[in-house]
Length: 303
Image (cartoon, rainbow, N blue to C red; front, side, top):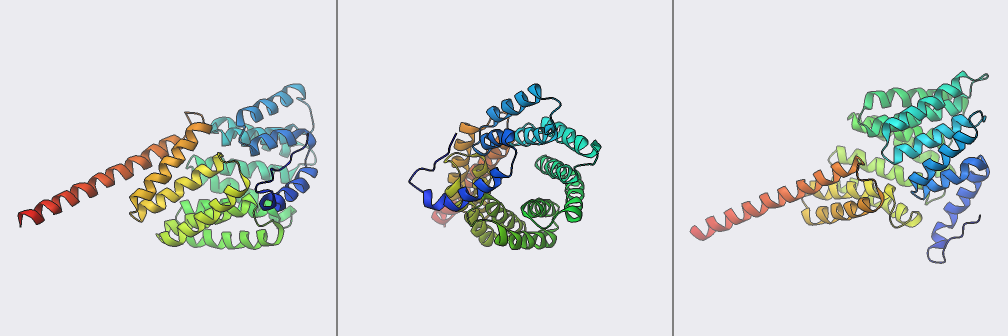
């Protein structure tokens, strides 16, 4: 089948589409369709596709790659335990075979690191990502995947409050991406958002908001109107406005995020707990502000 961009916005997306064509041409054709479904946010269909391949070709030489692809799909769908299981299956296969496929094993470790990070198990995430980076440094040049691991490590360092380490990694990531990626590539958006996360933890909310907006701008250019990758970014922007005490903007972003999540995510997805908690924060603080304002007004009248 063929993909064609609509006239509206086609020029904006052209550079990214050309990059994707090159990436797909270097990929296994069997996996390409399932990966495309993931990029479109069709996680259930992607999962069914990869499971069908596993059932039909249990001894295929690409089984480890299929496990990794299935693991990524499960992670994006919020099925973390299944994702961990499939990544471990992929890693075991890649390391048992002779000669071992160490770069593929590094990819599985990177995937495990992401899953553990999303579960807030940062020590396990750091362990897997560090080992993944070690393998890449030994066997590959500084390419996109190498930068992706640095990006993921930066996110972990941010969560562990090692902010300077996080920024050092992100600067290296940006240098690599400047050399090899198109201007509107989603990994550039991820880097902007991670930099925004670091400044958020530093309580530099103005700079954080600037980087979040840069990341969102790229996502809005290249992704469908409703896509999971936008949800966390919108939520982050809402949190920045909340910290800046701009409750009206914060509430608007949280509501927009929740509406998008309700359309595309399963109801048991962990993001829903965060979103509802954030909306409660804004409502409670707005109520406190209104109460304080009413009290101040009453005291002024009495005086």
